[in-house]
Image (cartoon, rainbow, N blue to C red):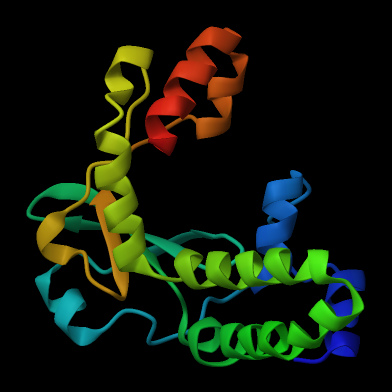
Length: 193
């Protein structure tokens, strides 16, 4: 993906991949799924599908992942997966673009670090096993004392390709911002440790 393609995607409002992720952090990400939107087929592997009680139903998408809802051993679950087109086409092109931006250190050495940080962030965001590790890191912060619920992973179904968790209707972590500053600081200091 070159600069011109990136600019075109930005101007046309593409929320795929890095641009969508940046918009999420800028709080300008909106999911605009056309009514005729059809998620990619063959996103979920046969091995996972055979273990489920029901056929997964597409729920929504984010900047990089699709979320499906299904039943497993009688309980409702959500499945987060990076679709093949994103995983095999869009993300590698964006990583390549970031690799090609190493020349920026000659123009402005202060930008080399942020470019590397964006690349590392993109790699982490597309790793479902990283999502699973993050859950366990968050669990150590004792979120229940702040009345924060975390999703409950279905350990036996989580993998490098899927983050599977009990389906819950939840508030976004952003809702923590409505709490007193002391609570926010305390909670974030536990996460950062």
